[in-house]
Length: 329
Image (cartoon, rainbow, N blue to C red; front, side):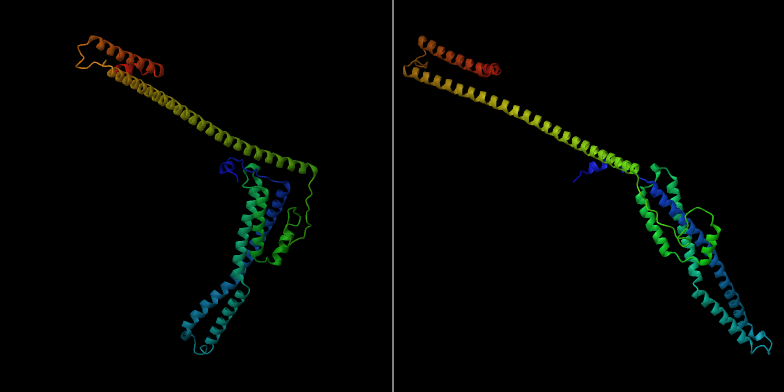
């Protein structure tokens, strides 16, 4: 599994565009503009129909409402016929309203208006995208085609049918134009794309370059990670080496001190044994024998001899601490 830092450091995928993709989008943009024109004309047509249905109903409803309040003001000879006239007008208004609802004039009016706006946005989006340089486009060609295809399919499914009279009018008006027209006007053949050798070689070269760039980026990241691990291990090794040296030095110092202590113990034991021997021969200086000068001199010589031996031992083993030990002695 790749490290998150590797994914972040990878170069962004190049926005790839092909001439065939631009050709398809150009055709869809022209088809969208054609549908926008026809839906706009259908909206105008249904808007006029809606006015022709709505205005008579408004006028008749106003007249019948006024006549109901003014029945008593009519002449006596007209009064038997006034309710009949009002009822006839109400029936006419209801009939017009029912016909308008049956023909779905208001619904188709709003449907064509919404479809005209949606196709306008669709066509304008394609024209703006194709007008930009490759580096400034929002995404790659294949991704943009997939989005536009789903959007165009949705618009064709949800948009109301265009009246045949408007389709014929559009075909007659733009008969001599060379742009691609919707298939409700003319059926065109399917364009099969065939790659040439240059395009195949270029595509393979681009794929190889992308692969090499990705491989180099992964190798560089792996080398950086390895160098970081190696430097960390070296640092830990140096720390352990220093700690080991310190431990060895401490062991040496401790060993020297132990040897010194053992030598001191040995010398003291020897000193005590000699004192014991002298004591056995009554050679130790005591209050009873303090008057004997020979014994005093011999005892003093023994003590001096022991001190010199201790001094020599400590000087051999711990030369640094000799002065301190001398002062203590």
